[in-house]
Image (cartoon, rainbow, N blue to C red):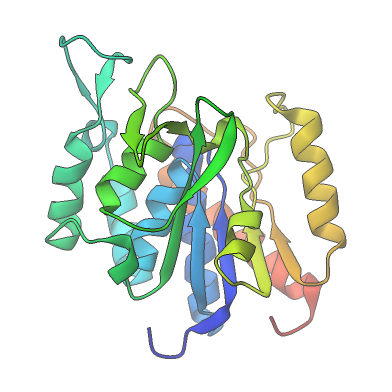
Length: 247
């Protein structure tokens, strides 16, 4: 994309409907002329990151978020599979939004979706191949959404091992990283590991941490999407103003 910074990345964490807050963050960055050329994300962060990496305007991304329903990425299936829902509808959703299912390496911004290799329990960066396969893998919550076989690996939700995948941004060539952590004061899943990582990020001058606060917001329904977008804008504005520096 013209005017993108090829050494600046944005990393978007997962969190179900909380991912709508990422849209507000992207809007503030655009308004301030901050244009990351590298995008990484996991789960809902990867969904938002993928359309941003594809070059969609941030206002269009907001319109998509406000219309979003879970049925766009998962449908009930009575066929035998490792999950209650079928994510093959992701391909149809991508076609509706982008007109095709692009290969990740052809996107105007560098993109990597982070998933978990269920055999090794390690994070995997998917930065090549069809967008639909990468997104189906990174959102595959075990027991609910089926894992995806890709490149000889069985892949599921990246948030299981790395819900703040800034290391993926470094692996894709970033020198500076904007990290958006969907924070909740009550969060307890992976609490200690995530808390340690966030402390390290906050202390690193090459990274900017943005933490929208998810308290009292709905995580698994879409009722708070507008509020989540507004919270993303608030958190991004506060973090950029507090940093007082050019990224």
